[in-house]
Image (cartoon, each protein chain N blue to C red):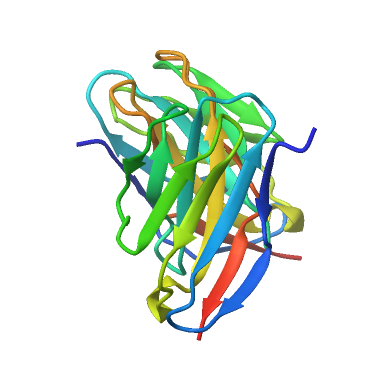
Length: 112
Length: 115
């Protein structure tokens, strides 16, 4: 079946550090891939998405590239800020289903 | 544009009480979803409605019922609340158009405590 695996947190970094949060998926064909962010006390918000292999999604300095060969969609940011502290969810959508499958989430904390 | 609106935002119940969580979206989306979020467990799908008039079970449907009242509204009911249902509940909606699924839009959540 379809599934998403992302690195366990919490991840703690200093401000301006480089961020990578790993995400791999299992699915047949070509699912759409997403990263969502959840700030404290709020619902999830779409951060970026990619719908086909080699697509790069980007938003607010974050990037993720859809890698079919490694079934991965790792989230990266070159220089994190305290305001990036949140929980990040990797997710996939497959056309055979009517629902998105979420990873378990990775909590990110940025120290000033 | 309100997006997805959930009510109430907070609720405390006693074991055995019943309650309905309300969700409404104003984006004319066909699909709506209810999730629960527990510490360390990410999001788990309770029920979803792919289109008006249909509902389907998700991963953790036991103890819940849903009603897709119309295209805008999708409610979640706890008939006899149990402490294990203490959680944060999120409603979401999306539009599905073949492979080009639009991402889900989430409400701000309902924090429910069962004593």
